[in-house]
Image 1 (cartoon, one colour):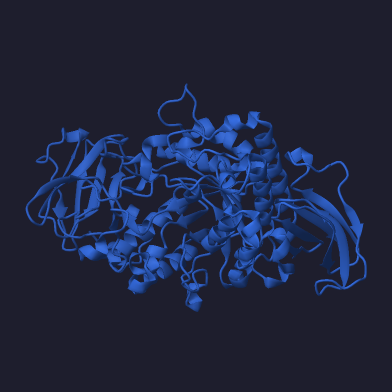
Image 2 (cartoon, one colour):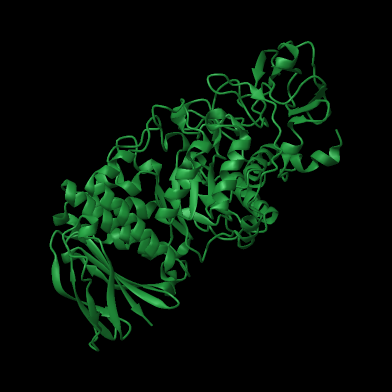
Length: 608
């Protein structure tokens, strides 16, 4: 092989290693290439040679790359590499660069072309952007459990859900769908986060062409698509990457570094060939499948050794992330979203690599999520002593570009669903959930909600079961879903809630210290309209409550979470309207006097 074609791979700077390695269909043959520097020998075995290791023995070059061309192999054939490892043991391995694979429990790689002539999203691809000053409202979903019925096969297919998914997202004003990993993986219960095929779209939900069509249809509907990507660890299964050539080819050399807390193996992010592998995998989904961004899993475990700050910073992993993010942005003209799931206080995660940051565009605000939910689990009697759990987020918010997440991780494994986490009775839980979501959508930062959250699902998520869509037949859930639609529309249509999201001038507290009443009030500023938001997490309603406001004008109630149409107790036919009075209050020149519902939130609009 020409060393010039592989130079970048061995330097850790290759974004398209999938064009070098794997099984590539030619007019009259298929070319196979795999990197395994310490293997003694490798054969390609498959349906085309009756799995006979003697028929297609690969040749090795001085860089450790094995290759061969097979004339009677064709698209759709299954294959593996039979590897005689460094110690003489023989093992069958799947292709690390396979584009498709057999459905579990089988695991062979499948020869597949990536040719797709149906793309109709050229305008979308040109206009998409990172969304810093745009509405970003993400619908996180697990494709396999979004919807199921008795007539469906074991797994739903992309084309069975796309039409309803688009309708659902449009109704709720979601701007993006984020899919949990669609790479190949062996165990359904890992949800795709323990991966075997970094370039192989899972065969559970259809072919790779059907996945491309899925993305294409969402783009045509004006909806972006983000995929979860797992660059930190991989499964231990012997048929995949583990000890690929008999040595730690992809994992760290030392077992204590290689073994993760998830019983998986950590990628050696210091190794240049591994860096090229992962950077190419990230680019693969963006370039070949037209995904608009990647949400990168377990970044905390890349920043610190084993995710523990006491173990120190993993400098090699941080260098890898900087390089990957910089090169991905350069390759895609800076119009992709790179999102970190990071629960640490490590600085500058979303700062440009040119300024010494890790180069992510967004970071999940796990602190906001944990503090807010912890507060709302408490009996309102005790909330006054935990008041600053709610206000603390704004003390650090401008240090990074945050996304506020209520993700799949918050509704599984005994944690309860978002609604069920709320204190109190059935009615109280929904009242507080409506107030919580009003707080979420009017707080600075982009939004992410897992499927089921927007219908008030009470059963924890189970990857084997459909969302509980039947809940729509119940008045409380029907009202909650309509509330979510109205809240999404309010967010989407008013720039005060997303423009200049990461500029301190767009947000101002009115009163952040009213712990005795469990009340919070603040202002969101837009180009044409400003909004006053009042949150009351007390079981007491308050009449004639006074709040300072910055402008003279008429303040009109445009959202009240306790309106009857949302299954509350307040009349929504006559929203509150009040004129500001020139009386200083809360360090503001004017004042309004309004009624505030118990366990509720109110949004007032004023035109400039």
